[in-house]
Image (cartoon, rainbow over all chains, first blue to last red; front, top):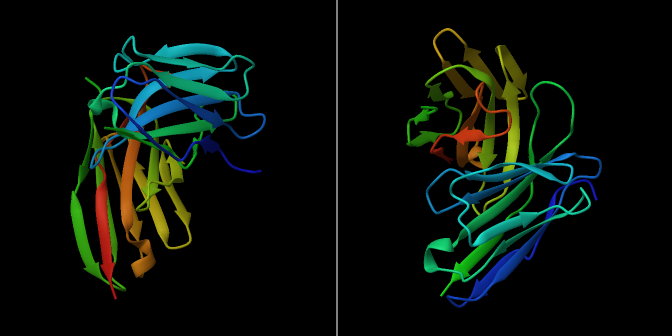
Length: 115
Length: 110
């Protein structure tokens, strides 16, 4: 596998339920990012990991959202007590470590629909 | 405030035309990305640049640091180029966060 993978690709849930998404970055990529994209808008940054450490977290990430990367490889994004406004495409990206600027490689995304 | 603006929002052109999409940003950046997003959501990174010009096939990206402006050009456009093109900037006051433009929806008609 040479790309970033995300699972599931689609999720339909009822309001109030909890959902969890998984992201598997490109092997050996230390950096992992989560974004959220709603229809017609550019992606919004949610959070960033370097290895297992969550180094930055957007104010968009309310208390209902939590992300983990326990072993510095795959990451999970959990949304508790989902609301209709959570309906969006959730994108994961990874990039290699190293000084200076980097290129982020994106996964196919998980499309969440909250009914 | 860190902001990224793109223009135009929508662009329709005939096959073969030269396409230009513009991106401007508010303050100093450490890098600017151009990405392509196809219907269905897949995002592909096209270019990452911090100065000068980069070329890949029919795509050319330029950046003018002094003017805080970048352009993406497509030569000899083709219907398969139809997609949303997004610029995203990493600002110097944030190591990790990309601020995204709203995107330019490009349609190339045969």
